[in-house]
Image (tube, rainbow, N blue to C red; front, top):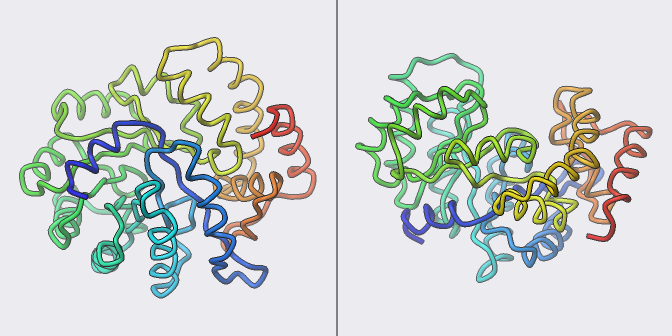
Length: 303
């Protein structure tokens, strides 16, 4: 897949991040990961992000990363494109990007470099080095320590033809407008705030009609219903699902730092597609929180 083909896919529909399956000892469990991908693939996501944030990329060792990406690519070949997560320090991100390309992924989502502060010059150098280390398409994730300005993205667009996507996890309207006004259709844009459905209509108005859905992991039918409602400006359906599910869901998710991942694994367990526990430093939902989440899922009906 060429970078431009990846760019087209990014702008064509809902994207999602499958969780990564672990056993009770915390080891990668490929059997149920394959079953998960086979279950989710037919629901119509335009691409799946393997080993992304919801897939606990930040907790995977080097050999595990390779196994997760290979499993995803082999399972979904001919069904749905796989975009691999890659991030952390520059040389780690390069190594993972090159490994993902070798294994047949269709591109990477360049996750934040973590921890250390850096100015725009350093961020440009980081993204440029990763882009130039591979031939396939790169999507940069603006979040946490990696926050690029419109001016920095213009420099990167000139230097890196394979940088084709921009995913926003910050939610600053002024910044998004400045990027979209400056860069236009040079990039495909992706809404990437946690529980992106809550922001979907606003981001569509900003010129970012596509987003990635974490809840697709356990309520794929509802996730697609909501996406189609956003695409068709069906505000009645959007508001119904926001009131019925998403806002009370956020009330659970926001109780503990890191629950953004934990609650997705909890939902998968509730609907019969258990992905095992989260890895430390994340913590699983408490029993009463699982019961609250189950009640929200049950009222949505069969998925």
